[in-house]
Length: 460
Ligand code: SF4
Image (cartoon, rainbow, N blue to C red):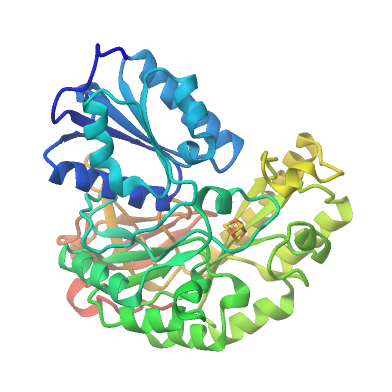
């Protein structure tokens, strides 16, 4: 085996992070483990002997970006460890295709990163990909957070038990494995002690949290347990409508720090399409279902995502979706064109829809939603809301943050003008803001009396 270019002992390691927030949490654990083991950790790839690329393989575009990153690093002569979904997906093939790759690490194997680097340092090319991804949830696992200090993502489960026809995630991440409530609360308390103001619970289907571990979903119990943790905002991602039971919605209403923000990845409205997609609620995501949720959580801010151009989607199916979106008036909508993935059931379905048609439908849907989003945002003008400040523009002192209406990265932001009351406002602080203007994506406002008003209108 060639030995030139081997990593020197206790190398400096940089990370290139791609993909979703679940991947981000894995990256943060790998960083923490390596730092604890005495490796140098650098934010700059130029300083590093080795770069760990935590890859995404969700759709073709994500794979292309992951491969581009790997090739660029290889061209710079970096030694590469490939972690995450691409490693799980292609395994040995990746080592064969990329001589600069020193190791591959599967989605359930990130906790072994120190051992992997030690073996690499000893001259091995390492394949550390478990065929069935494991999930070792451990609140004691070191973690080096990379998001803003005030925001932390907390993984409550890994994997998914459903088999949606378009989705490769169960193949890459395995079936659902939940953490215990005690483990999640323990980590939330650690994050609270670090000054975290917003905790974002993530998994594939957070409404199914606990089913594998306790025999029935336990999201309501989890939210009530987290209510005792000193973190002002708890946001839940990926609430599936069928899992929003009266008990779960009661927890949203009654636990003061749980935000009434529902991220519902509906994907389509038409029963034919939902059946073809093998979604769990094939009878249709209908007005009755959404109305029940709205009645039980009247303040809910609703985000959803849809896929257009799924095989077999006719113009009539798409019109059904357009009408549903016009009726439902969601606060935020993401629209994706179907991406055919090898290894999924949808790849071999008949009646594939041409890309141009899918793109055209995406444009029509987004155009309708823009108007709705603008109107929903406009309804917030005149309200006083808590805003978590995340950035400050040094040139004009303008502050940028989010109120409960906006989740990080996917929704809009609140631009906050400093006023006489805003002297104490800085990144990481939560301040009351009077909303003075709105556009289709963002809000604008000014800080109002800090002492009297903090938490004045955390709920809408
Ligand atoms: S619910 Fe469906 S789309 Fe979501 S992760 Fe599971 S299989 Fe994929």
